[in-house]
Image (cartoon, rainbow, N blue to C red; front, top):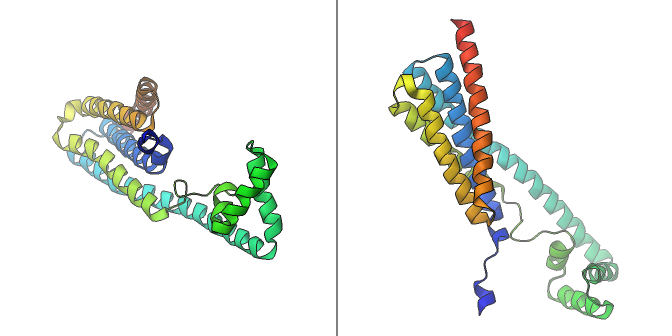
Length: 231
């Protein structure tokens, strides 16, 4: 009974990657934009507009990029499957031996490998080759629209925090409020992603805090220099 309840973190990789990357990117990039603008031009309306523009443009860009990237993967998968289907029709015996060789390399005896390959071929030849020869399965299969929607939603959700802070924080302490809230939420996101993915929470949190601080620090410096130069 235990094996039916066993959890596998790899089952979560697809949606987890898109969601966490999107939220991290939305939070970090929008906060960085706001910090840079606040350091250059301490005007409330300008900062709010920068946060809103960063949130909308970033979410659209993230979704479009993810859609194009995953669509390319999907096209490659379809082309591979089409070629595999043709080969199965034209030279089934060679394809059977090819499948058996794959199982042999995994440590199965020659006789067992051939028997397994034969039975799987009789059941669903294309599915067997897709899974074991091409490495395509329902976990790793490309889903462009799903990836795009997940990226858009998660980016917008992450970017919502700096936008709210830009509306509510006092103008003089805007940079400090943005940095403080972002670091706290980046730590939470890092901990959630590590926990969901089964990795070490401490390392994930330290990593995101360090690079988050670097990114926001650089944009604040650029904004400050730009503001000084303009004035």
